[in-house]
Each structure stands twice: as C-alpha cells, then as structure tokens.
Length: 244
Image (cartoon, rainbow, N blue to C red; front, side):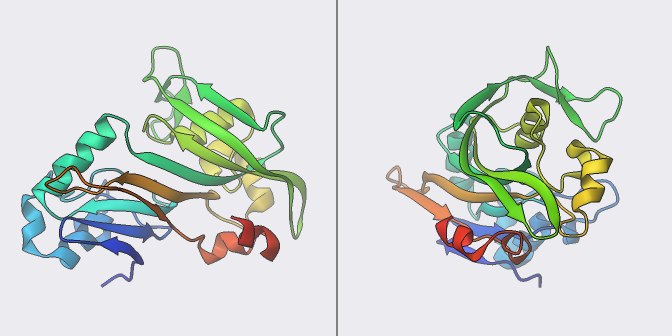
C-alpha cells in the first residue's frame, strides 16, 4: 500500500499530508486503485463504501495532483456530512504556501475574480467575466527569495482561498502577474524551462487546515499543519524553512 503520512485519525476522519503526483479521484486514463480515493478504500476497508459518492468514497475536498499538503478524508457518513456542511458554509480554514515569480508591491492583498474553464484549452482555467465567483487572500511572507542556480527574484506567499474553485490559487496569481514557480500550465513554457532543473511541479503546498472535528456534540476546532516535502525544502535556506 502507498505510504501516506497521517497527521490525525479518529473513528470519523483521517487527516493526511498528501504527497505530490497523487490524483485525488480517478479520471480519464487513471484507475480507482491509483487514486487517493483508492488508497482510502484500502486503508479504511469496506465500511467506507457507504460514505459519499462512488469511486470517491470519503473524499470531501481535493488538491491538484502535484499539490502537496493537508487533506481530510471522512471514514463515516456522519463525518462526511458534517465536513461537507463546513466546506459548503466556508467555515473550513485553508492556508497554502506558494513561491511565485517576482515580488508583489503590497504585503497583503485580496483577489476577487471569477474563474471559468478556458474555452480554448479545457485543461486550463482563466479569470473570465461570467465565471464562478472566486476569492483568495494573500500575505507576503518573504520577499526576494534566492534559489541556488536561478538568477531571479522570487517571493513566498501565504494563500488563503475563501472559495474552492479548481486551480483557484494558480489562476489568480497568474492573472495578477505572479505565477507559481514550477507551474507549467500557468507560468508559461519559458519560465517553466528556466526552473525545470530545480523544480518540476508547482511550488504549492497546503500547509494548514482547520475545521470542527465531526462529532455528535458539534465538535471542537482543530488545526493541522503539514510539513513541507523535501523537494520544496531544497529550494529554501535552512533558516527560512525553520521560520515557516
């Protein structure tokens, strides 16, 4: 079985630190067994087959294939329904760490911009009038981050999506002119080729996840922090890693 770090587990939920390269639910050309949903089915057992939708049992939210970090999976119907309600009412708090090209002028800013699928390329999403409302809060954590072997200025941002649209953080940052380092889909071929020798996926990590633990009494608030994976740590100085 695929080894996935578990940050927390009780009789209703599992909180994991999702690794890069793992698709959450099966899609075109990918079997159920190769997905995170497949891992959850094997880990929890037959009881999870009553939780949620077919072939995505227990899955209440998603991360992109190459995005790492904190995710919660429901093990029971009660856990699933209570978590889905929190996501629906936007009571779940999510915080991501992203390294981007360039340095924003403001230390804190918000992007309110609708997102829709690109009519010219179904794999991409774009800021587009008439799309689904999307809102993301950003905070500058470190400016002018130096990466060994790359002669360019980068910065580290904390990204807090208020809504949960597909590729939301990646699309909003690209639209603002600060695409995520290593994001082949949204930073463009030239930028991707420049950083490919040090990183081949988006520097985007779901660092913190907070919600009320599902329970019969309304639950208690908990926050879970997922450590940075080794490939992202390698791009940062040891002092900066310790600060995060």
